[in-house]
Length: 440
Image 1: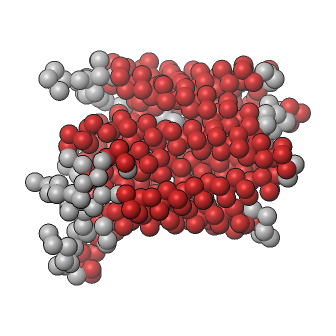
Image 2: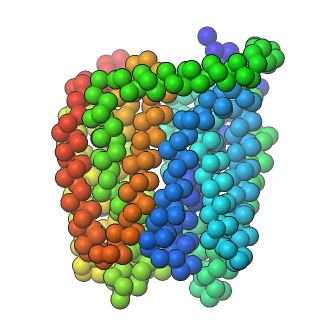
Image 3: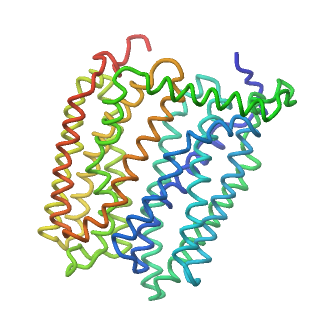
């Protein structure tokens, strides 16, 4: 039984900020980096290719996740990774106007990405160590909410601030230098806050330590044991029944969205004469980073609620069509090029709502496939495939778009929905999975 003897700290004092801090570096790397490079004059092909590589830490994080257990406490990993991420963001700010700015800023974004991926491992483990099972359940919605808040702040407010500074200074590099500097400063303040406010659960210790925190096993022996366990985890994962179909589903279900998510921001900012909508940075922050994320969140919440009333199998096909059909909205936007911000925002809201609703099936299937022995480790492998499903198509999305133009690109993305339907037809799901059981 876990020892929950903790230097008491109200969970409200650290859970919201911890998961806000988990979301900010991710959105900076995955969304803001691409927009920043686009505003600084990078081509669509290069912006999509370079920033897609930044997914790699989330793809391969299961490889080094055992180290977080082996060495130091998870609290230590959380605080140190937050400082590393803050320094990385500051490095981006200081090198935007430097010689070799692209190479230097990408290097610092890589630091942020690796720090963020490692932080995710430690934070999720710490959450389970610092709370008993009742409070884990009680605060699971809170952690998800504040992760979403981080996305809204990152994609919405950050872009609107950058856009206003672009207008005020009439100097795009300077505007982004100041924006990234403010984000870095805020994040480092958050790291300092967590240095003092995070609880110190007795159960938070490296697996090499005994109950008194004294290391009992040599690092070499523990690494050897960890490697054996790591190999066995992968072996049992790939021996699961239907693993080939499961991997195909995890890689292809989101293929249309993988193309769209890389190109949508570039489409919104490109001028009308280049096939885009010509929105300002502030307008993109409002349309994509605020209303779009609200739609995404609502879709996810509703999807989660209704699957408890019928299960994943019952709602799979409504979710498949929900994640597929709204992609046609971008074909409409690229052909008509409406200049009304409200029309554009409404279209993005609908598309993101459909994606949020349809993405629920994807998440639930990963949970379903991970069931059994080594459930947590197998789920981590599933999330690696999830990251790969976004990284690989995103690397080629910009090249394809520049070759065929926006309307044809969006039509190709819509045709990829047939692959979404195909892999959805292949999977097998227990009809009772996801249904709320009586008395629970």
